[in-house]
Image (tube, rainbow, N blue to C red):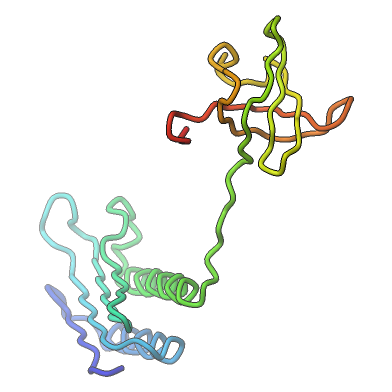
Length: 188
């Protein structure tokens, strides 16, 4: 670390074991992610307030290169396990490790990108209003039945309407199910 870690205890005089645990957690973060430039840990004792009485709060702020940060602040207020100081400290550092892992994945480009459902355009509709065909982005035509269109949306479909769909195998080849019309700007 470029600066000495700041560790502060408020409204509490912790036992030496807790001080040692915080120091150990900070050292582990530094050893595992050596690019931490600054660290501030604040352990707040239980207050006399109605909502938070009896629960410890641990706040961790880590500064990383390129202006990135990791902030671990409030845990779920209803988590009564935070009445145990050891749990509160361990849980806060567990969340800090998770956020650092996420930062490292983003930096290394290992973030998963989830593809949405395929998009197509309606190219033909049955004049009797029972089925239609849509064209996929790779140029294939796929059959769909009026019952495959969600929320009774078949009546709103027109040739050229953009839709999302799920492709499945039918009796005569590929067919679309769960057909959803996209909005005006391609949004659902």
